[in-house]
Image (tube, rainbow, N blue to C red; front, side, top):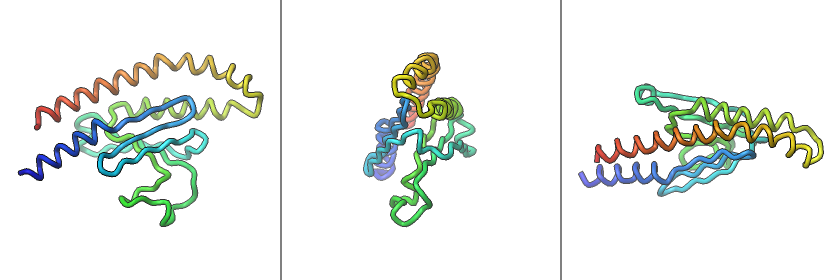
Length: 159
């Protein structure tokens, strides 16, 4: 009984301490309570974006978004203890995985279009694209906050 309460407390704490941030240049992810993992990944290194959803996740309307980055093949030094590659970032249990994937894809397109021009030119050309995505980003963040609050209430009721 005590172990179950302890495990539930760890799951809840893990949920509360996890955060994701998508900026104009990179992704930042922090997760974990006992083993804290924080990663920053630039868009230039992203190789693949995929969404996975198990049956329980499908039932409650959430999914996992996986972002793989460049860095060579998996060798012993590239893996952490859990067996997951250090070149992989996961957005776990999000209800707007498609929107996050589209946001990252849009930022990747902007990066490809930047060319080799002058830095001031690139900033000026990207300014319009960034300002036009702000409402979408704010909307996605509000939805993510609402889902997190709903998930928190569900966990609190279960406890």
